[in-house]
Image: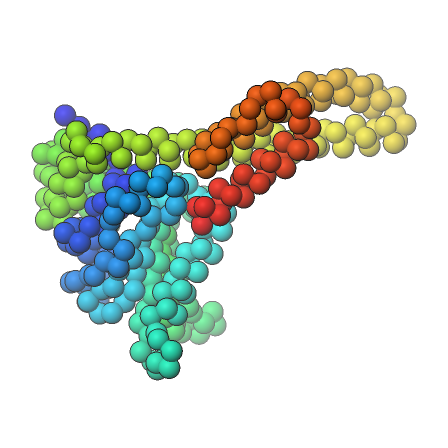
Length: 332
């Protein structure tokens, strides 16, 4: 029977790679991504997995922060959606780790590299098939790099061409991507055959634990629903913004036709004015629904339908914008 647990859901991801007992899995993932000349042999997790993180039911970024055997500071996270400012946030995380490791008065030469890693379940750079990007501090003219500084890695999972028949002989990074994307489709025995090394077996064992009828499974299911609702909300917001942009363009076209005194433009303006009246009604209804959904995700009492009827479009839009801002701040 398939495990049915997606390792890309942050509850599963954090339990696999953020549990000290699973250090082999974390080391294996880091070595597969970073490909150091001298592989990582030991890590100390600085923010280990905790049920309290998920009991709060907040859609925060759940990352794994650690130090490796050579003193490097690392941050690893899993993202199911690509949001504005993602690269800037990853760079900020790396810079924060680089700065925070030194105490006041310490020699700057003691600073160790700080590396921020983001695994993505969506495309970040749609104009290229390159799946793994590695950003470092480099002089553009000479190609000379600043050693022991900051790095940002992005790994776009869906760009990998994975094949069950050959995955056991693929690169370690491809094998980890296979587990992250497809573990839920296999039973543990078959998955261990496809991925025969100890670090993968440690990760698969954790997925087995979550798949059991325990509080882990309940928290996983709850988290998956919340993330699915959140992703749907973001998609709805983008669709609404796109549609409103088109409606605004049509409205401007009508106004331009009216000012030019073109009879055809006036006739279209009258007709589209009627259309915009209908659109406005539909738009307000959809906006109220999105407001109520965001309020539920934030833990607020949903807007009462009777109260919403007395609100203008401007008031509804202002309320929606404020809720969006609260959601962004909560997820930051």
